[in-house]
Length: 424
Image (cartoon, rainbow, N blue to C red; front, side, top):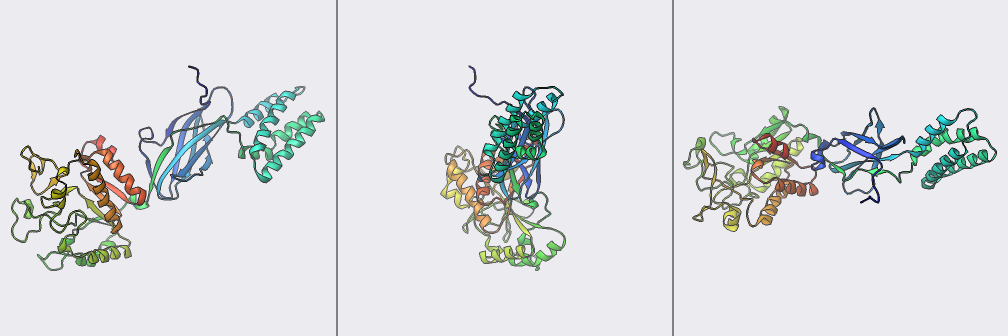
């Protein structure tokens, strides 16, 4: 079947892009995005190309001209000035005016009769006049009028001089006829984040270890006293392990022993007890007022907070009774604890992303992220993301970024290179 329409310009090998545009590239605010592409078409027409960029959701494009190097290689760049998702594309078209200027310049030899070529050129110029605005339109129309007068008087060289003059040349570049152009689709994406997402110095910080009194459980208030020292060492991110209530059942003792002695506080990664789960605060660390004071102290020192996001539940977690379908079950109906043979984690139940209540589980995990963002957390160190479905991460990160585009996600994944690349 003969196509009714088809692109007259070929745009290929666009860089940068990841997996043919399946995933966004990443930049930090204020950086430039350098773009290259192979752009060409049949015949001998001169081509022009523009790089178009905008923040997702905006209507107007920011356009900048691309430059031809060698062998149909074109280059351009744009700046990303705001945090959040951006998109970019390329529009290329046959530049009929520049093609005409080249043609008329070659043909303009002594004795040549160029009446037809001059009329063709004037038709091209009139198309640009029709799309020009304000004073620019008046200037182009004035030049067209002068060309008409010179043509009527038989002054061929005068018409040519007006048609290829510098004044008209700049105006035609401003108002080209793109009606036969081609725009690359779909657009390519850029995720723009804060400069600290490119590099940051993290200090791993256990609040329960910050007491000035030996063998006494530390608190958030104790932790505040340590912050100036940490800032003075050059750190700009405090990385906290889980700070949620810790389970009682099968609580691990010192040095990961299977039996906890009286007073052993357990592993922070075994999350949940009668005081709450992933949106709870371990009571021995303090109150929510203490947390607010800790966040305020960090902000005063320009220290950001990264929280370990761990999808582990202790057997005492509220999810276990409220949503037993979110867990793996043995044939006898009991819930399976986490294992990585020969290691066993009796104090931890992993979540089952194959649950029949996928929507409920995903929405709850999103709620936890948003809860802690509202509490002042700006970065999440995600524990073992390679053991959860990649589509979940794509969805939940997208949902968080819709509301809080500056939130940073770090994948703590020690796994196969291809999975690590995909998570990145």
